Image (cartoon, rainbow, N blue to C red):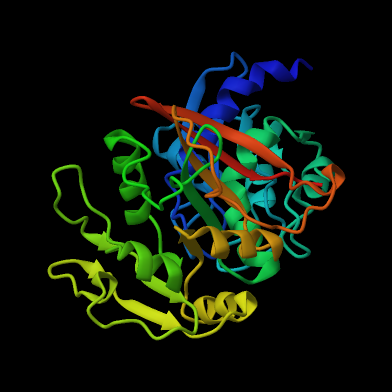
Length: 346
Protein backbone atom coordinates (compact mmCIF):
# COMPACT_ATOMS: atom_id res chain seq x y z
CA UNK A 1 0.00 0.00 0.00
CA UNK A 2 1.42 3.40 -1.04
CA UNK A 3 0.96 5.55 2.07
CA UNK A 4 1.87 8.74 0.18
CA UNK A 5 -1.62 8.76 -1.34
CA UNK A 6 -2.99 9.71 2.09
CA UNK A 7 -0.67 12.65 2.78
CA UNK A 8 -2.88 15.27 1.12
CA UNK A 9 -5.96 13.97 2.89
CA UNK A 10 -4.13 13.98 6.23
CA UNK A 11 -3.05 17.58 5.72
CA UNK A 12 -6.70 18.43 5.15
CA UNK A 13 -7.66 16.53 8.31
CA UNK A 14 -5.04 18.48 10.29
CA UNK A 15 -6.44 21.74 8.93
CA UNK A 16 -9.95 20.63 9.94
CA UNK A 17 -8.74 19.81 13.45
CA UNK A 18 -7.99 23.51 13.97
CA UNK A 19 -11.76 24.12 13.92
CA UNK A 20 -12.00 22.23 17.21
CA UNK A 21 -11.96 24.22 20.48
CA UNK A 22 -8.40 25.18 21.36
CA UNK A 23 -8.72 24.58 25.11
CA UNK A 24 -11.02 21.63 25.66
CA UNK A 25 -11.08 18.41 27.65
CA UNK A 26 -10.79 16.57 24.34
CA UNK A 27 -8.02 16.92 21.74
CA UNK A 28 -8.43 18.83 18.48
CA UNK A 29 -9.18 16.18 15.84
CA UNK A 30 -10.15 16.29 12.17
CA UNK A 31 -11.28 13.54 9.81
CA UNK A 32 -11.68 13.01 6.06
CA UNK A 33 -13.43 10.07 4.39
CA UNK A 34 -12.23 8.98 0.96
CA UNK A 35 -13.55 6.62 -1.69
CA UNK A 36 -11.30 4.09 -3.40
CA UNK A 37 -10.34 6.65 -6.04
CA UNK A 38 -9.10 9.00 -3.32
CA UNK A 39 -11.92 11.52 -3.67
CA UNK A 40 -13.18 13.27 -0.53
CA UNK A 41 -16.67 12.05 0.34
CA UNK A 42 -17.11 13.77 3.72
CA UNK A 43 -15.26 15.73 6.38
CA UNK A 44 -15.66 16.29 10.10
CA UNK A 45 -14.09 17.63 13.27
CA UNK A 46 -14.71 17.55 16.98
CA UNK A 47 -16.69 20.51 18.30
CA UNK A 48 -16.10 20.07 22.01
CA UNK A 49 -16.86 17.80 24.94
CA UNK A 50 -20.12 15.89 24.59
CA UNK A 51 -20.32 16.33 20.80
CA UNK A 52 -19.54 13.65 18.18
CA UNK A 53 -15.86 12.93 17.69
CA UNK A 54 -14.35 13.84 14.33
CA UNK A 55 -14.79 10.38 12.77
CA UNK A 56 -18.43 10.19 13.80
CA UNK A 57 -19.03 13.75 12.64
CA UNK A 58 -17.65 12.82 9.22
CA UNK A 59 -19.75 9.64 9.15
CA UNK A 60 -22.87 11.64 10.05
CA UNK A 61 -22.13 14.06 7.20
CA UNK A 62 -21.60 11.10 4.89
CA UNK A 63 -24.97 9.62 5.84
CA UNK A 64 -26.72 12.96 5.48
CA UNK A 65 -25.41 13.20 1.92
CA UNK A 66 -26.51 9.63 1.16
CA UNK A 67 -22.93 8.60 0.38
CA UNK A 68 -22.28 5.94 3.02
CA UNK A 69 -21.19 2.78 1.23
CA UNK A 70 -18.88 -0.07 2.34
CA UNK A 71 -15.19 0.04 1.48
CA UNK A 72 -14.33 3.66 2.25
CA UNK A 73 -11.17 4.96 3.92
CA UNK A 74 -11.21 7.18 7.01
CA UNK A 75 -8.24 9.53 7.42
CA UNK A 76 -8.15 10.94 10.95
CA UNK A 77 -5.53 12.91 12.86
CA UNK A 78 -5.69 10.82 16.05
CA UNK A 79 -6.05 7.06 16.51
CA UNK A 80 -9.78 6.37 16.91
CA UNK A 81 -10.77 6.03 20.55
CA UNK A 82 -11.76 2.69 22.02
CA UNK A 83 -13.81 3.63 25.07
CA UNK A 84 -17.17 5.03 26.05
CA UNK A 85 -17.12 8.45 27.71
CA UNK A 86 -19.64 11.16 26.90
CA UNK A 87 -19.80 9.50 23.47
CA UNK A 88 -19.29 5.94 22.23
CA UNK A 89 -16.07 4.43 20.86
CA UNK A 90 -15.14 5.74 17.42
CA UNK A 91 -13.46 2.47 16.51
CA UNK A 92 -16.82 0.69 16.82
CA UNK A 93 -18.62 3.41 14.84
CA UNK A 94 -16.13 2.98 11.99
CA UNK A 95 -16.52 -0.80 12.05
CA UNK A 96 -20.31 -0.59 11.98
CA UNK A 97 -20.16 1.87 9.06
CA UNK A 98 -18.23 -0.66 6.99
CA UNK A 99 -15.05 1.42 6.73
CA UNK A 100 -12.41 -0.61 4.96
CA UNK A 101 -9.29 1.26 6.01
CA UNK A 102 -8.33 3.74 8.75
CA UNK A 103 -5.31 6.01 8.41
CA UNK A 104 -4.23 8.17 11.37
CA UNK A 105 -1.39 10.50 12.32
CA UNK A 106 -0.79 10.15 16.07
CA UNK A 107 -1.25 7.19 18.37
CA UNK A 108 -3.60 7.90 21.27
CA UNK A 109 -1.53 7.60 24.48
CA UNK A 110 -4.55 7.42 26.77
CA UNK A 111 -4.80 4.33 28.97
CA UNK A 112 -8.56 4.07 28.50
CA UNK A 113 -8.99 5.92 25.20
CA UNK A 114 -6.13 4.33 23.25
CA UNK A 115 -5.95 1.01 21.48
CA UNK A 116 -8.61 1.66 18.90
CA UNK A 117 -6.33 0.31 16.20
CA UNK A 118 -6.42 -3.13 17.78
CA UNK A 119 -10.22 -3.21 17.81
CA UNK A 120 -10.24 -2.13 14.17
CA UNK A 121 -7.72 -4.76 13.11
CA UNK A 122 -9.62 -7.46 15.00
CA UNK A 123 -12.67 -6.56 12.92
CA UNK A 124 -10.70 -6.86 9.67
CA UNK A 125 -10.13 -3.15 9.08
CA UNK A 126 -6.76 -2.22 7.59
CA UNK A 127 -4.97 0.29 9.85
CA UNK A 128 -2.10 2.62 8.90
CA UNK A 129 -0.63 4.81 11.63
CA UNK A 130 1.95 7.57 11.87
CA UNK A 131 1.11 9.50 8.68
CA UNK A 132 2.29 13.14 9.14
CA UNK A 133 2.55 12.62 12.88
CA UNK A 134 5.18 15.39 13.13
CA UNK A 135 2.87 17.87 11.42
CA UNK A 136 0.00 17.05 13.74
CA UNK A 137 2.13 17.09 16.88
CA UNK A 138 1.96 20.90 17.40
CA UNK A 139 -1.85 20.71 17.29
CA UNK A 140 -2.03 17.79 19.71
CA UNK A 141 0.67 18.89 22.16
CA UNK A 142 -1.35 21.41 24.22
CA UNK A 143 -3.89 18.69 25.00
CA UNK A 144 -1.13 16.24 25.89
CA UNK A 145 0.41 18.73 28.33
CA UNK A 146 -3.00 19.47 29.88
CA UNK A 147 -3.98 15.81 30.19
CA UNK A 148 -0.76 14.22 31.38
CA UNK A 149 0.96 17.08 33.23
CA UNK A 150 -2.24 18.68 34.55
CA UNK A 151 -0.94 22.18 34.02
CA UNK A 152 -1.42 24.94 31.44
CA UNK A 153 0.36 24.79 28.10
CA UNK A 154 3.05 27.49 28.19
CA UNK A 155 3.94 29.58 25.12
CA UNK A 156 7.05 31.74 25.54
CA UNK A 157 7.27 34.77 23.26
CA UNK A 158 10.08 37.23 22.68
CA UNK A 159 11.17 39.69 20.01
CA UNK A 160 14.88 39.95 19.35
CA UNK A 161 17.56 41.05 16.95
CA UNK A 162 19.32 38.45 14.83
CA UNK A 163 22.01 38.20 17.49
CA UNK A 164 19.43 37.43 20.17
CA UNK A 165 19.23 40.81 21.91
CA UNK A 166 15.94 42.17 23.25
CA UNK A 167 17.22 45.67 24.03
CA UNK A 168 20.19 47.96 23.54
CA UNK A 169 22.76 48.47 26.29
CA UNK A 170 20.82 51.50 27.60
CA UNK A 171 17.66 49.38 27.94
CA UNK A 172 15.74 50.81 24.97
CA UNK A 173 13.73 48.18 23.10
CA UNK A 174 10.94 49.99 21.20
CA UNK A 175 10.69 48.90 18.58
CA UNK A 176 12.92 45.97 17.68
CA UNK A 177 10.31 44.52 15.33
CA UNK A 178 7.92 46.23 12.92
CA UNK A 179 4.16 46.74 12.88
CA UNK A 180 3.33 43.43 11.16
CA UNK A 181 5.06 41.47 13.90
CA UNK A 182 3.36 43.49 16.63
CA UNK A 183 -0.06 42.94 15.05
CA UNK A 184 0.63 39.21 15.00
CA UNK A 185 1.52 39.28 18.71
CA UNK A 186 -1.72 41.07 19.58
CA UNK A 187 -3.79 38.55 17.61
CA UNK A 188 -2.11 35.72 19.50
CA UNK A 189 -2.74 37.50 22.79
CA UNK A 190 -6.43 37.70 21.94
CA UNK A 191 -6.48 33.96 21.23
CA UNK A 192 -4.85 33.15 24.57
CA UNK A 193 -6.42 32.50 27.96
CA UNK A 194 -3.78 34.24 30.06
CA UNK A 195 -0.77 36.49 29.52
CA UNK A 196 2.09 36.22 31.99
CA UNK A 197 4.84 38.70 32.95
CA UNK A 198 7.16 39.31 35.87
CA UNK A 199 7.20 42.32 38.17
CA UNK A 200 10.38 43.63 36.48
CA UNK A 201 8.56 43.92 33.16
CA UNK A 202 5.69 45.82 34.78
CA UNK A 203 8.05 48.25 36.51
CA UNK A 204 10.40 48.85 33.60
CA UNK A 205 8.10 48.72 30.56
CA UNK A 206 4.72 49.62 32.16
CA UNK A 207 2.83 47.51 29.59
CA UNK A 208 -0.95 47.44 29.22
CA UNK A 209 -0.89 43.76 28.21
CA UNK A 210 -4.11 44.10 26.27
CA UNK A 211 -4.85 42.73 22.81
CA UNK A 212 -5.38 45.43 20.21
CA UNK A 213 -6.51 45.24 16.60
CA UNK A 214 -4.44 46.95 13.88
CA UNK A 215 -6.78 49.99 14.09
CA UNK A 216 -5.98 50.36 17.80
CA UNK A 217 -9.33 49.12 19.11
CA UNK A 218 -9.50 46.27 21.60
CA UNK A 219 -10.24 42.68 20.63
CA UNK A 220 -13.54 41.52 22.11
CA UNK A 221 -11.81 38.73 24.06
CA UNK A 222 -8.96 39.67 26.35
CA UNK A 223 -6.65 37.29 28.26
CA UNK A 224 -6.34 37.25 32.02
CA UNK A 225 -3.33 39.45 32.85
CA UNK A 226 -1.09 37.67 35.35
CA UNK A 227 1.89 39.22 37.15
CA UNK A 228 4.35 36.92 38.92
CA UNK A 229 6.55 38.17 41.74
CA UNK A 230 6.51 39.33 45.35
CA UNK A 231 7.36 42.98 44.73
CA UNK A 232 4.74 45.63 45.57
CA UNK A 233 3.65 47.39 42.38
CA UNK A 234 2.18 50.84 41.92
CA UNK A 235 -1.58 50.68 41.40
CA UNK A 236 -1.12 53.36 38.75
CA UNK A 237 0.65 50.83 36.51
CA UNK A 238 -1.19 50.50 33.21
CA UNK A 239 -1.59 46.75 33.60
CA UNK A 240 -4.12 47.40 36.39
CA UNK A 241 -6.32 49.61 34.22
CA UNK A 242 -9.77 48.17 33.57
CA UNK A 243 -11.04 47.59 30.05
CA UNK A 244 -14.58 48.47 29.04
CA UNK A 245 -16.70 46.56 26.55
CA UNK A 246 -14.60 43.40 26.44
CA UNK A 247 -14.72 39.89 27.86
CA UNK A 248 -11.92 39.10 30.30
CA UNK A 249 -8.91 41.34 30.78
CA UNK A 250 -8.79 41.19 34.58
CA UNK A 251 -5.41 41.51 36.29
CA UNK A 252 -4.08 39.39 39.15
CA UNK A 253 -0.72 39.29 40.88
CA UNK A 254 0.59 35.96 42.17
CA UNK A 255 3.02 36.90 44.92
CA UNK A 256 5.36 33.96 44.59
CA UNK A 257 8.54 32.91 42.83
CA UNK A 258 7.52 29.27 42.76
CA UNK A 259 6.55 28.60 39.15
CA UNK A 260 4.93 25.26 39.95
CA UNK A 261 2.64 27.10 42.35
CA UNK A 262 1.83 29.57 39.57
CA UNK A 263 0.94 26.72 37.22
CA UNK A 264 -1.24 25.07 39.87
CA UNK A 265 -3.07 28.30 40.70
CA UNK A 266 -3.85 29.08 37.06
CA UNK A 267 -4.83 25.46 36.37
CA UNK A 268 -7.30 25.62 39.26
CA UNK A 269 -8.73 28.80 37.74
CA UNK A 270 -9.47 26.88 34.54
CA UNK A 271 -6.53 28.29 32.56
CA UNK A 272 -5.25 25.74 30.05
CA UNK A 273 -2.86 27.94 28.04
CA UNK A 274 -0.52 30.80 28.99
CA UNK A 275 1.16 33.35 26.72
CA UNK A 276 4.40 34.50 28.38
CA UNK A 277 5.69 37.96 27.44
CA UNK A 278 8.64 38.38 29.73
CA UNK A 279 10.96 39.35 30.83
CA UNK A 280 14.11 37.37 30.25
CA UNK A 281 14.37 36.37 33.92
CA UNK A 282 10.88 34.84 34.03
CA UNK A 283 11.16 33.18 30.64
CA UNK A 284 14.57 31.71 31.48
CA UNK A 285 13.20 30.38 34.76
CA UNK A 286 10.32 28.69 32.98
CA UNK A 287 12.69 27.02 30.53
CA UNK A 288 15.01 25.92 33.33
CA UNK A 289 12.04 24.46 35.22
CA UNK A 290 10.98 22.54 32.06
CA UNK A 291 7.69 24.41 31.96
CA UNK A 292 8.08 26.06 28.53
CA UNK A 293 6.33 24.09 25.80
CA UNK A 294 6.30 26.37 22.77
CA UNK A 295 8.36 29.34 21.59
CA UNK A 296 7.35 32.28 19.41
CA UNK A 297 10.49 34.12 18.37
CA UNK A 298 10.09 37.32 16.36
CA UNK A 299 13.44 38.10 14.74
CA UNK A 300 14.27 41.53 13.34
CA UNK A 301 17.05 42.10 10.78
CA UNK A 302 19.13 44.08 13.27
CA UNK A 303 22.38 43.55 15.15
CA UNK A 304 22.53 45.11 18.61
CA UNK A 305 25.20 43.32 20.61
CA UNK A 306 25.69 43.90 24.29
CA UNK A 307 24.36 42.15 27.37
CA UNK A 308 20.56 42.29 26.89
CA UNK A 309 19.99 38.73 25.71
CA UNK A 310 16.55 37.21 25.17
CA UNK A 311 17.29 34.21 27.38
CA UNK A 312 19.60 34.09 30.40
CA UNK A 313 20.90 31.16 32.41
CA UNK A 314 18.78 28.06 31.79
CA UNK A 315 21.12 25.56 33.38
CA UNK A 316 22.96 24.53 30.22
CA UNK A 317 26.59 23.88 31.10
CA UNK A 318 27.59 21.96 27.99
CA UNK A 319 26.22 21.59 24.48
CA UNK A 320 24.83 18.17 25.29
CA UNK A 321 22.45 19.80 27.76
CA UNK A 322 20.93 22.09 25.14
CA UNK A 323 17.17 22.44 25.01
CA UNK A 324 16.30 20.89 21.66
CA UNK A 325 13.37 22.32 19.72
CA UNK A 326 11.38 21.33 16.66
CA UNK A 327 10.67 24.24 14.32
CA UNK A 328 7.05 23.89 13.20
CA UNK A 329 6.48 27.19 11.42
CA UNK A 330 8.36 30.09 9.87
CA UNK A 331 6.44 33.13 8.72
CA UNK A 332 7.62 36.43 7.20
CA UNK A 333 6.06 39.47 8.85
CA UNK A 334 7.12 42.54 6.92
CA UNK A 335 10.89 42.83 7.34
CA UNK A 336 10.82 40.44 10.30
CA UNK A 337 10.35 36.70 10.58
CA UNK A 338 8.47 34.57 13.07
CA UNK A 339 9.95 31.25 14.13
CA UNK A 340 7.57 28.98 16.00
CA UNK A 341 9.04 25.94 17.74
CA UNK A 342 7.99 23.34 20.27
CA UNK A 343 9.98 21.23 22.69
CA UNK A 344 11.34 18.30 20.71
CA UNK A 345 10.01 14.91 21.71
CA UNK A 346 12.65 12.64 23.22
